[in-house]
Length: 233
View 1 (tube, rainbow, N blue to C red):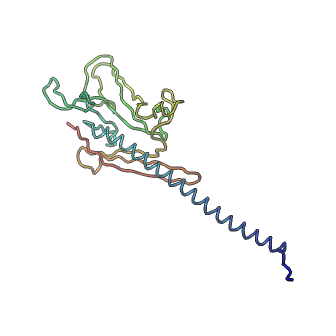
View 2: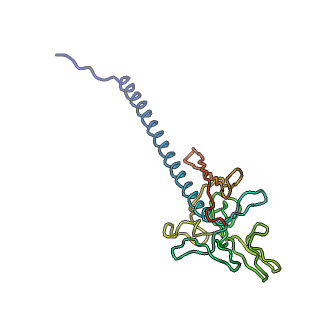
View 3: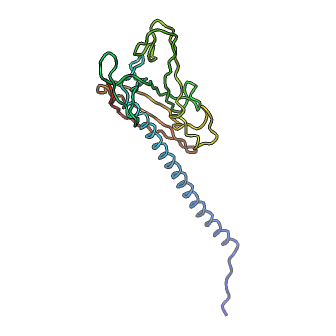
């Protein structure tokens, strides 16, 4: 009768070692694939968010009737029409001087801030609306010192107010949100610029850069769009 040969301790250790190496390799590949999938998912979300932010700004700028530049010639403020119809569409009107066209209404600006919208700098995209108060005098349609509607002869003042409805997620999406605090619609923005240099008349170029962080990996996504000011007078 033939004797059966057993497994020696050395053979068992070799088998366990080889199996361990194979398992380590498989786990390494799985971990790499998981990290890559997470990074791709995060990047896809960043791209989606950047395009959403661009679409939101584009809608306002397309509807503007005029664009105001800063001292460097870069557009910073966008004047929307004052009048709308019952459906919310902007419509022209005939003022007292008989000139038919869009009349100046809300003035908007965009900037990066913290989650409150009240600090200079940050990584959250905010929309602001200029609110003007006056102590009397006549209204000058235009911008004085970078702000809309300076009042001649009478103590004008005003301020840029964060637009929470545009900039923050709805409270139904984040129950802990309170006034001027919460989760912003467009976080992780590292750069935002507006320019008209080299562009056709009444056209604004917007460049938005968002940063994506996934673990130890990071990447940036930049989207650029040329927007025509459709309602310009």
